[in-house]
Image: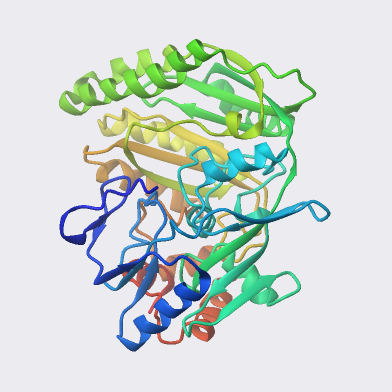
Length: 439
Protein backbone atom coordinates (compact mmCIF):
# COMPACT_ATOMS: atom_id res chain seq x y z
CA UNK A 1 0.00 0.00 0.00
CA UNK A 2 1.66 3.19 -1.15
CA UNK A 3 0.71 6.73 -0.28
CA UNK A 4 2.40 7.78 -3.49
CA UNK A 5 -0.04 8.94 -6.10
CA UNK A 6 0.88 7.07 -9.22
CA UNK A 7 -0.28 9.70 -11.66
CA UNK A 8 -1.07 9.59 -15.34
CA UNK A 9 1.47 8.22 -17.87
CA UNK A 10 3.54 6.46 -15.23
CA UNK A 11 4.46 9.62 -13.32
CA UNK A 12 5.64 8.99 -9.78
CA UNK A 13 4.92 11.63 -7.11
CA UNK A 14 6.02 11.96 -3.50
CA UNK A 15 3.69 12.42 -0.51
CA UNK A 16 4.40 16.15 -0.21
CA UNK A 17 3.53 16.67 -3.88
CA UNK A 18 6.73 18.66 -4.52
CA UNK A 19 8.68 15.95 -6.42
CA UNK A 20 7.68 13.96 -9.49
CA UNK A 21 9.56 11.65 -11.85
CA UNK A 22 8.90 9.56 -14.95
CA UNK A 23 10.77 6.26 -14.73
CA UNK A 24 11.49 4.33 -17.94
CA UNK A 25 10.13 1.21 -16.25
CA UNK A 26 8.84 -0.08 -12.94
CA UNK A 27 9.16 -3.47 -11.25
CA UNK A 28 7.69 -4.90 -8.07
CA UNK A 29 9.92 -7.91 -7.27
CA UNK A 30 8.46 -10.63 -5.05
CA UNK A 31 11.85 -11.99 -3.94
CA UNK A 32 15.45 -10.93 -3.44
CA UNK A 33 16.45 -13.03 -6.49
CA UNK A 34 13.91 -11.19 -8.66
CA UNK A 35 15.20 -7.86 -7.39
CA UNK A 36 18.83 -8.79 -8.08
CA UNK A 37 17.88 -9.92 -11.59
CA UNK A 38 16.08 -6.61 -12.23
CA UNK A 39 19.21 -4.69 -11.17
CA UNK A 40 21.38 -6.79 -13.51
CA UNK A 41 18.94 -6.30 -16.38
CA UNK A 42 18.89 -2.52 -15.78
CA UNK A 43 22.69 -2.52 -16.01
CA UNK A 44 22.56 -4.34 -19.36
CA UNK A 45 20.07 -1.74 -20.63
CA UNK A 46 22.10 1.18 -19.26
CA UNK A 47 19.35 2.27 -16.84
CA UNK A 48 19.92 3.81 -13.44
CA UNK A 49 18.07 2.18 -10.54
CA UNK A 50 16.11 3.53 -7.57
CA UNK A 51 14.05 1.74 -4.94
CA UNK A 52 11.18 3.85 -3.66
CA UNK A 53 9.21 3.48 -0.42
CA UNK A 54 6.03 5.44 0.28
CA UNK A 55 7.40 8.73 -1.01
CA UNK A 56 7.58 10.42 2.39
CA UNK A 57 10.85 12.20 1.54
CA UNK A 58 10.52 15.83 0.49
CA UNK A 59 13.82 15.66 -1.44
CA UNK A 60 14.17 13.93 -4.81
CA UNK A 61 16.24 11.16 -3.17
CA UNK A 62 13.99 8.45 -4.70
CA UNK A 63 13.37 10.05 -8.10
CA UNK A 64 14.66 8.32 -11.23
CA UNK A 65 14.15 8.33 -14.99
CA UNK A 66 15.51 4.76 -15.08
CA UNK A 67 14.23 1.67 -13.27
CA UNK A 68 11.91 2.29 -10.33
CA UNK A 69 11.74 -0.62 -7.87
CA UNK A 70 8.58 -0.76 -5.79
CA UNK A 71 9.03 -2.86 -2.66
CA UNK A 72 5.42 -3.58 -1.70
CA UNK A 73 5.74 -7.34 -2.33
CA UNK A 74 8.85 -7.54 -0.15
CA UNK A 75 7.02 -7.23 3.14
CA UNK A 76 6.54 -9.09 6.39
CA UNK A 77 8.62 -10.54 9.18
CA UNK A 78 11.18 -13.19 8.14
CA UNK A 79 12.04 -14.33 11.62
CA UNK A 80 11.96 -13.41 15.29
CA UNK A 81 14.99 -14.38 17.34
CA UNK A 82 13.95 -14.26 21.01
CA UNK A 83 17.36 -15.34 22.24
CA UNK A 84 19.15 -12.37 20.67
CA UNK A 85 16.03 -10.17 20.79
CA UNK A 86 16.02 -9.25 17.11
CA UNK A 87 13.48 -9.28 14.33
CA UNK A 88 14.38 -9.64 10.65
CA UNK A 89 11.94 -7.85 8.39
CA UNK A 90 11.59 -7.43 4.61
CA UNK A 91 12.59 -3.96 3.43
CA UNK A 92 9.21 -2.94 2.01
CA UNK A 93 7.30 -3.51 5.25
CA UNK A 94 5.50 -0.35 6.38
CA UNK A 95 6.48 0.71 9.91
CA UNK A 96 2.84 0.74 10.99
CA UNK A 97 2.48 -2.93 10.02
CA UNK A 98 5.73 -3.81 11.76
CA UNK A 99 4.64 -2.03 14.96
CA UNK A 100 1.32 -3.91 15.10
CA UNK A 101 2.95 -7.28 14.30
CA UNK A 102 5.61 -6.79 16.99
CA UNK A 103 3.02 -5.76 19.59
CA UNK A 104 1.10 -8.97 18.84
CA UNK A 105 4.31 -10.88 19.63
CA UNK A 106 4.80 -8.90 22.86
CA UNK A 107 7.72 -6.92 21.37
CA UNK A 108 8.56 -3.34 20.45
CA UNK A 109 11.25 -1.14 18.95
CA UNK A 110 12.96 1.01 21.60
CA UNK A 111 12.32 4.29 19.81
CA UNK A 112 10.60 5.46 16.63
CA UNK A 113 9.66 8.55 14.66
CA UNK A 114 6.28 10.18 14.78
CA UNK A 115 5.06 9.12 11.32
CA UNK A 116 4.67 5.40 10.63
CA UNK A 117 3.53 5.36 7.00
CA UNK A 118 7.05 4.82 5.63
CA UNK A 119 8.63 1.52 4.69
CA UNK A 120 11.23 0.32 7.16
CA UNK A 121 14.04 0.63 4.61
CA UNK A 122 12.91 4.03 3.35
CA UNK A 123 12.77 5.36 6.89
CA UNK A 124 16.17 3.99 7.90
CA UNK A 125 17.96 4.87 4.66
CA UNK A 126 17.11 8.56 5.13
CA UNK A 127 17.85 8.65 8.87
CA UNK A 128 14.29 8.95 10.20
CA UNK A 129 14.26 9.44 13.97
CA UNK A 130 12.10 10.30 16.92
CA UNK A 131 13.36 12.00 20.04
CA UNK A 132 15.43 10.45 22.81
CA UNK A 133 17.92 11.22 25.53
CA UNK A 134 19.56 7.77 25.38
CA UNK A 135 17.88 6.02 22.43
CA UNK A 136 18.61 7.07 18.86
CA UNK A 137 17.16 6.82 15.33
CA UNK A 138 15.53 3.73 13.85
CA UNK A 139 18.74 3.06 11.87
CA UNK A 140 20.74 2.95 15.12
CA UNK A 141 18.61 -0.06 16.12
CA UNK A 142 19.72 -2.06 13.05
CA UNK A 143 21.81 -5.16 13.89
CA UNK A 144 22.16 -6.52 10.37
CA UNK A 145 21.08 -5.83 6.80
CA UNK A 146 20.93 -7.44 3.38
CA UNK A 147 21.95 -5.35 0.38
CA UNK A 148 21.72 -5.97 -3.37
CA UNK A 149 24.70 -4.16 -4.90
CA UNK A 150 25.23 -2.78 -8.41
CA UNK A 151 26.44 -6.07 -9.92
CA UNK A 152 23.37 -7.91 -8.61
CA UNK A 153 25.17 -9.71 -5.78
CA UNK A 154 23.65 -9.95 -2.30
CA UNK A 155 25.73 -8.75 0.66
CA UNK A 156 24.85 -9.52 4.27
CA UNK A 157 26.25 -6.94 6.67
CA UNK A 158 26.58 -6.65 10.43
CA UNK A 159 29.23 -5.63 12.96
CA UNK A 160 30.94 -8.97 12.22
CA UNK A 161 30.21 -9.41 8.51
CA UNK A 162 31.25 -6.62 6.09
CA UNK A 163 31.48 -4.17 9.03
CA UNK A 164 32.65 -1.27 6.84
CA UNK A 165 29.53 -1.58 4.69
CA UNK A 166 27.38 -1.99 7.81
CA UNK A 167 28.72 1.28 9.29
CA UNK A 168 27.57 3.18 6.21
CA UNK A 169 24.62 1.25 4.76
CA UNK A 170 22.38 1.64 7.81
CA UNK A 171 21.80 5.18 6.48
CA UNK A 172 22.88 4.57 2.90
CA UNK A 173 20.67 7.10 1.03
CA UNK A 174 20.08 4.41 -1.59
CA UNK A 175 23.61 5.13 -2.86
CA UNK A 176 25.25 1.80 -1.99
CA UNK A 177 22.62 -0.62 -3.23
CA UNK A 178 19.04 -1.72 -2.59
CA UNK A 179 18.32 -2.83 0.99
CA UNK A 180 16.18 -5.99 0.90
CA UNK A 181 15.97 -6.92 4.59
CA UNK A 182 16.83 -5.45 7.99
CA UNK A 183 17.48 -7.08 11.33
CA UNK A 184 16.38 -4.76 14.15
CA UNK A 185 16.94 -4.93 17.89
CA UNK A 186 13.67 -5.31 19.78
CA UNK A 187 12.69 -5.59 23.43
CA UNK A 188 9.69 -6.84 25.38
CA UNK A 189 6.81 -4.45 24.85
CA UNK A 190 6.66 -1.75 27.54
CA UNK A 191 4.45 1.13 28.60
CA UNK A 192 5.13 4.82 28.19
CA UNK A 193 3.42 7.61 30.04
CA UNK A 194 3.04 10.71 27.89
CA UNK A 195 2.63 14.11 29.47
CA UNK A 196 1.59 16.77 27.00
CA UNK A 197 1.25 20.32 28.24
CA UNK A 198 1.58 23.90 27.04
CA UNK A 199 4.64 25.82 28.25
CA UNK A 200 5.90 29.33 27.44
CA UNK A 201 8.62 29.38 24.76
CA UNK A 202 11.04 31.32 26.96
CA UNK A 203 10.65 28.85 29.80
CA UNK A 204 11.31 25.86 27.52
CA UNK A 205 14.50 27.51 26.27
CA UNK A 206 15.65 28.47 29.77
CA UNK A 207 15.00 24.95 31.11
CA UNK A 208 15.90 22.99 27.97
CA UNK A 209 18.89 21.08 29.42
CA UNK A 210 16.86 20.14 32.48
CA UNK A 211 13.83 19.01 30.46
CA UNK A 212 16.15 16.97 28.24
CA UNK A 213 18.02 15.38 31.19
CA UNK A 214 14.92 14.50 33.22
CA UNK A 215 12.99 12.75 30.45
CA UNK A 216 13.71 9.73 28.29
CA UNK A 217 11.94 11.38 25.36
CA UNK A 218 11.37 15.13 25.32
CA UNK A 219 10.09 17.21 22.40
CA UNK A 220 8.18 20.40 21.87
CA UNK A 221 6.34 22.37 19.21
CA UNK A 222 6.65 26.15 19.06
CA UNK A 223 3.99 28.14 17.26
CA UNK A 224 5.62 31.05 15.39
CA UNK A 225 4.03 34.48 16.07
CA UNK A 226 3.31 33.31 19.64
CA UNK A 227 5.22 32.82 22.86
CA UNK A 228 3.61 29.41 23.29
CA UNK A 229 4.79 25.82 22.92
CA UNK A 230 3.26 22.43 23.38
CA UNK A 231 5.65 20.05 25.18
CA UNK A 232 5.62 16.26 25.20
CA UNK A 233 7.47 14.09 27.72
CA UNK A 234 7.43 10.31 27.28
CA UNK A 235 8.84 8.11 30.03
CA UNK A 236 8.68 4.41 30.79
CA UNK A 237 5.97 3.43 33.17
CA UNK A 238 5.04 0.48 35.37
CA UNK A 239 1.41 1.04 34.34
CA UNK A 240 -1.47 0.57 34.48
CA UNK A 241 -2.37 1.20 30.84
CA UNK A 242 -4.48 4.34 30.54
CA UNK A 243 -4.97 5.06 26.83
CA UNK A 244 -6.51 8.30 25.58
CA UNK A 245 -10.30 7.73 25.67
CA UNK A 246 -11.57 7.12 22.14
CA UNK A 247 -13.82 10.16 21.84
CA UNK A 248 -11.28 12.52 23.36
CA UNK A 249 -8.55 11.00 21.21
CA UNK A 250 -10.65 11.57 18.12
CA UNK A 251 -11.37 15.19 19.08
CA UNK A 252 -7.71 15.97 19.85
CA UNK A 253 -5.85 13.88 17.28
CA UNK A 254 -8.27 13.96 14.37
CA UNK A 255 -10.52 17.00 14.76
CA UNK A 256 -8.04 19.50 16.26
CA UNK A 257 -4.64 18.19 15.08
CA UNK A 258 -5.84 17.27 11.59
CA UNK A 259 -9.36 18.56 10.77
CA UNK A 260 -9.48 22.04 12.29
CA UNK A 261 -5.77 22.47 11.58
CA UNK A 262 -6.40 21.69 7.89
CA UNK A 263 -9.15 24.34 7.72
CA UNK A 264 -6.96 26.86 9.58
CA UNK A 265 -4.21 26.25 7.01
CA UNK A 266 -6.63 26.69 4.12
CA UNK A 267 -7.70 30.04 5.58
CA UNK A 268 -4.06 30.99 6.20
CA UNK A 269 -3.07 30.09 2.65
CA UNK A 270 -5.92 32.19 1.23
CA UNK A 271 -5.45 35.13 3.64
CA UNK A 272 -1.91 35.10 5.09
CA UNK A 273 -2.65 38.13 7.30
CA UNK A 274 -4.89 35.91 9.46
CA UNK A 275 -2.07 33.50 10.35
CA UNK A 276 -0.76 35.16 13.56
CA UNK A 277 -4.30 35.22 15.01
CA UNK A 278 -4.89 31.61 13.97
CA UNK A 279 -1.53 30.65 15.53
CA UNK A 280 -2.63 32.14 18.88
CA UNK A 281 -5.78 29.99 18.77
CA UNK A 282 -3.93 26.85 17.54
CA UNK A 283 -1.33 27.13 20.27
CA UNK A 284 -4.08 27.06 22.91
CA UNK A 285 -6.38 24.50 21.27
CA UNK A 286 -4.71 21.43 22.74
CA UNK A 287 -5.07 21.25 26.49
CA UNK A 288 -2.76 19.31 28.82
CA UNK A 289 -3.23 15.54 28.93
CA UNK A 290 -1.53 12.48 30.37
CA UNK A 291 -1.96 8.93 29.12
CA UNK A 292 -0.15 5.58 29.30
CA UNK A 293 0.04 3.14 26.40
CA UNK A 294 2.35 0.84 24.41
CA UNK A 295 5.16 2.65 22.53
CA UNK A 296 3.85 2.97 18.99
CA UNK A 297 0.56 4.41 20.27
CA UNK A 298 2.51 7.09 22.14
CA UNK A 299 5.37 7.84 19.74
CA UNK A 300 3.38 8.00 16.51
CA UNK A 301 0.46 10.17 15.45
CA UNK A 302 -1.60 10.51 12.30
CA UNK A 303 -0.48 13.28 9.92
CA UNK A 304 -3.23 13.95 7.42
CA UNK A 305 -2.52 17.63 6.74
CA UNK A 306 -0.04 17.65 3.86
CA UNK A 307 3.01 19.86 4.22
CA UNK A 308 6.60 20.36 3.09
CA UNK A 309 9.41 20.28 5.61
CA UNK A 310 13.03 21.20 6.26
CA UNK A 311 14.85 19.77 9.27
CA UNK A 312 18.38 20.36 10.49
CA UNK A 313 20.44 18.58 13.13
CA UNK A 314 22.52 21.00 15.19
CA UNK A 315 24.83 20.24 18.13
CA UNK A 316 22.58 19.95 21.20
CA UNK A 317 24.46 22.76 22.94
CA UNK A 318 23.50 25.15 20.11
CA UNK A 319 19.77 24.51 19.98
CA UNK A 320 18.53 27.35 22.22
CA UNK A 321 20.66 29.94 20.37
CA UNK A 322 19.40 28.67 17.02
CA UNK A 323 15.77 28.84 18.18
CA UNK A 324 16.17 32.40 19.49
CA UNK A 325 17.65 33.39 16.14
CA UNK A 326 14.77 31.67 14.34
CA UNK A 327 12.21 33.59 16.41
CA UNK A 328 13.95 36.91 15.74
CA UNK A 329 14.09 36.13 12.03
CA UNK A 330 10.37 35.26 11.83
CA UNK A 331 9.40 38.39 13.81
CA UNK A 332 11.46 40.71 11.59
CA UNK A 333 10.75 39.08 8.25
CA UNK A 334 7.05 39.72 7.81
CA UNK A 335 6.71 35.98 7.06
CA UNK A 336 3.43 34.29 7.98
CA UNK A 337 4.07 30.77 9.30
CA UNK A 338 1.02 28.61 10.06
CA UNK A 339 2.85 25.39 11.03
CA UNK A 340 4.60 24.83 14.36
CA UNK A 341 8.37 24.34 14.62
CA UNK A 342 9.25 20.90 16.01
CA UNK A 343 12.25 20.35 18.30
CA UNK A 344 13.64 16.90 19.22
CA UNK A 345 16.96 15.36 20.34
CA UNK A 346 19.16 12.31 19.75
CA UNK A 347 22.33 10.96 21.35
CA UNK A 348 25.51 10.62 19.27
CA UNK A 349 25.70 7.45 17.16
CA UNK A 350 28.36 5.70 15.03
CA UNK A 351 26.66 5.60 11.61
CA UNK A 352 28.77 7.30 8.92
CA UNK A 353 26.15 9.70 7.50
CA UNK A 354 23.72 9.79 10.43
CA UNK A 355 22.71 13.35 11.28
CA UNK A 356 23.73 12.47 14.86
CA UNK A 357 27.02 10.84 13.84
CA UNK A 358 29.61 11.51 16.53
CA UNK A 359 27.71 14.30 18.26
CA UNK A 360 24.84 14.83 20.69
CA UNK A 361 22.16 16.37 18.56
CA UNK A 362 19.04 18.50 18.58
CA UNK A 363 16.70 18.66 15.61
CA UNK A 364 14.79 21.73 14.48
CA UNK A 365 12.10 21.15 11.86
CA UNK A 366 10.27 23.91 10.00
CA UNK A 367 7.14 23.15 8.00
CA UNK A 368 4.87 24.93 5.54
CA UNK A 369 1.39 23.94 4.43
CA UNK A 370 1.49 22.16 1.06
CA UNK A 371 0.91 24.62 -1.76
CA UNK A 372 2.12 27.74 0.07
CA UNK A 373 5.40 29.37 -0.99
CA UNK A 374 8.03 28.10 1.43
CA UNK A 375 11.30 29.21 -0.17
CA UNK A 376 11.84 32.49 1.69
CA UNK A 377 11.14 30.96 5.11
CA UNK A 378 13.23 27.85 4.49
CA UNK A 379 16.14 29.84 3.03
CA UNK A 380 16.26 32.16 6.05
CA UNK A 381 15.96 29.22 8.47
CA UNK A 382 18.67 27.30 6.62
CA UNK A 383 21.05 30.25 6.96
CA UNK A 384 20.62 30.05 10.75
CA UNK A 385 21.05 26.26 10.90
CA UNK A 386 24.16 26.16 8.72
CA UNK A 387 25.80 28.87 10.84
CA UNK A 388 25.64 26.25 13.65
CA UNK A 389 27.21 23.52 11.46
CA UNK A 390 23.78 22.02 10.89
CA UNK A 391 23.31 18.76 9.03
CA UNK A 392 20.15 18.54 6.92
CA UNK A 393 17.81 15.57 7.16
CA UNK A 394 18.45 13.52 3.99
CA UNK A 395 14.76 13.22 3.20
CA UNK A 396 13.74 16.83 3.81
CA UNK A 397 14.16 20.00 1.77
CA UNK A 398 17.61 21.61 1.84
CA UNK A 399 20.07 23.21 -0.58
CA UNK A 400 23.38 21.73 0.68
CA UNK A 401 25.92 20.04 -1.58
CA UNK A 402 28.85 17.65 -1.21
CA UNK A 403 31.29 20.49 -0.52
CA UNK A 404 29.30 21.69 2.49
CA UNK A 405 28.41 18.20 3.73
CA UNK A 406 32.02 16.97 3.63
CA UNK A 407 32.79 19.76 6.11
CA UNK A 408 30.12 18.76 8.68
CA UNK A 409 30.54 14.96 8.40
CA UNK A 410 34.00 13.83 9.60
CA UNK A 411 33.74 10.47 7.78
CA UNK A 412 32.17 11.77 4.57
CA UNK A 413 35.20 10.65 2.51
CA UNK A 414 34.86 7.12 3.90
CA UNK A 415 31.28 6.94 2.59
CA UNK A 416 32.15 8.16 -0.91
CA UNK A 417 35.14 5.76 -1.10
CA UNK A 418 32.84 2.85 -0.19
CA UNK A 419 30.40 3.98 -2.86
CA UNK A 420 33.22 4.03 -5.43
CA UNK A 421 33.92 0.41 -4.51
CA UNK A 422 30.30 -0.86 -4.43
CA UNK A 423 28.87 1.21 -7.27
CA UNK A 424 31.73 2.32 -9.57
CA UNK A 425 29.38 2.89 -12.52
CA UNK A 426 26.90 4.89 -10.41
CA UNK A 427 24.01 2.52 -11.12
CA UNK A 428 22.17 4.01 -8.11
CA UNK A 429 22.95 7.65 -8.94
CA UNK A 430 20.34 10.35 -9.43
CA UNK A 431 20.42 14.16 -9.43
CA UNK A 432 20.00 14.38 -5.68
CA UNK A 433 22.87 11.99 -4.91
CA UNK A 434 25.07 13.78 -7.45
CA UNK A 435 24.49 16.99 -5.50
CA UNK A 436 24.94 15.68 -1.94
CA UNK A 437 27.68 13.11 -2.55
CA UNK A 438 29.44 14.61 -5.55
CA UNK A 439 29.86 13.02 -8.97
